[in-house]
Image (cartoon, rainbow, N blue to C red):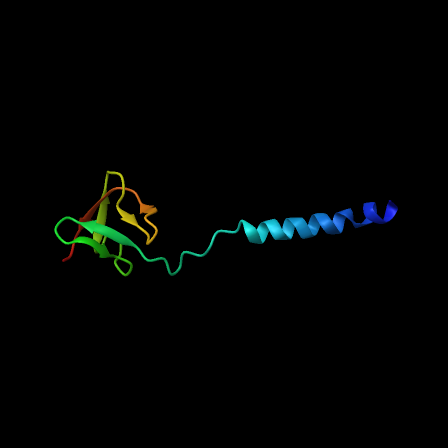
Length: 81
């Protein structure tokens, strides 16, 4: 019984480390972004800069990722073609 009690801190540390890796959010450095252009339909805006190439006006969804999850809120307004 004492052996089990002595190993509890090590087990707790192992569980905490496992949870930290399991619930860590992935990096968004290579995230692909899309937007719905008013005339062209869905376009890739990954290399576009907010405020320089496009703006997000008030609305539901400005840009979204490849899974359809919202990246930026608002209506997409292109500043370049």
